[in-house]
Image 1 (tube, rainbow, N blue to C red):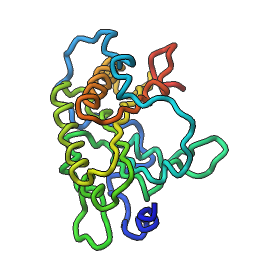
Image 2 (image 1 turned 30 degrees about the vertical axis):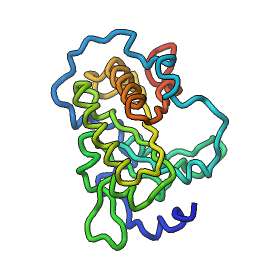
Image 3 (image 1 turned 120 degrees about the vertical axis):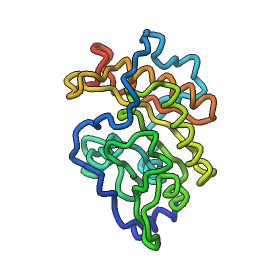
Image 4 (image 1 turned 90 degrees about the vertical axis):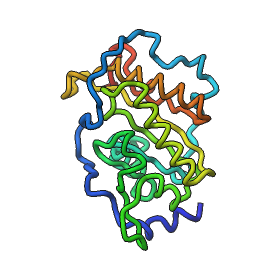
Length: 231
């Protein structure tokens, strides 16, 4: 789309909090340790959400990526660090279509002024950036920094953020990405895959209720033999 040709000229740069070389996000928005019991049924039910979970398809190509705006925490930042294939030296995303902020969580989507644009005196929030950029679609991923938050509070804040993004530019498709699996050798041993699975199941349910699509990237990144992130 033509608008992406103007993005680089319009954007001044990334937020100072963005740490491309950072490690796994620290939990910054939890509201007390989660004590909810976990059961295997809290995995995302593929049959129940078959109309919401995006199915596996052939590679849509670079154009699909270029016309997509990626929003999220440091997991989104890392899209600018790795290429889409082993044979490519080009990063998966670039400054033109990536707004990622280290340690950011769902409660900050509507309030954190994290992006600068030429012609604007102040930084803008993610929903405001969506209004300016007007992408064809938005892929958003939060939750790594909210694993200790109770489910209802997490979903309530996520709904608020997604509604703000939709209201800012209703013509963009919204895809909610799963929370990625944790490394078994994670630094914070208080975090578990039970928390990830619980919130991902809640995200899928929210997407079905609100009319968004759910990208189950967690399944592709999880080692079925260990239940943790693939090495």
